[in-house]
Image (cartoon, rainbow, N blue to C red):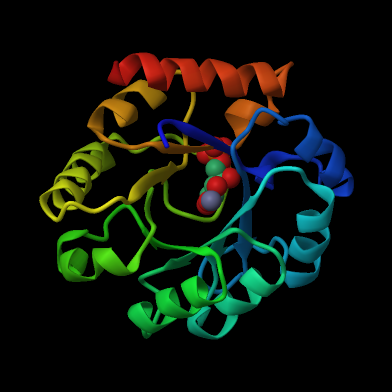
Length: 220
Ligand code: DX5
Ligand code: ZN
């Protein structure tokens, strides 16, 4: 698939979500951060808004569930129209079953790891997934500083995927900007979430293209 850019609507204007989606028409995905004020200390949106946004936006929705009990809720996000659903391994009781349910309903299944969660214990279940999301900030808020400490984990994750001959995407999320995207692409990430970098730009679509070209250059 190559490099893909997924703007996060967390820093967009929530009263104008359809317009904010249209402002990043060049994006491959629209990244939707679902927070429940339990798994993370912040509250955003849930199923009804995802359902409306899936109808209003041109881009497929990449739903990042920062919630407790994703085992119960994740399949509903596929039914609401998400094309990719990501659950956090730290919150999930049965990640293999949950990933299979997401796939069975027709979406891509992804598992997210907080910055301090290692990838190695999950080596044997990588084949159950379509994507690994590596958080490059502690989840909960946009606009935080990129954690360089995660870059070696991106590299180790890419090595594990290659070792097993799998076709998994690595998405990174948190503090991604023109300053940080290249080192992540070099380390093996291929799907880039960017919230504040895109939505604080004068021209969000131009920033999407700028980030895409920086990442593409970095791996060429
Ligand atoms: C943070 C969210 C991110 C957030 C990224 O918990 O998962 O998707 O919107 O925002 P920036 O790009 O501003 O770090
Ligand atoms: Zn996110």
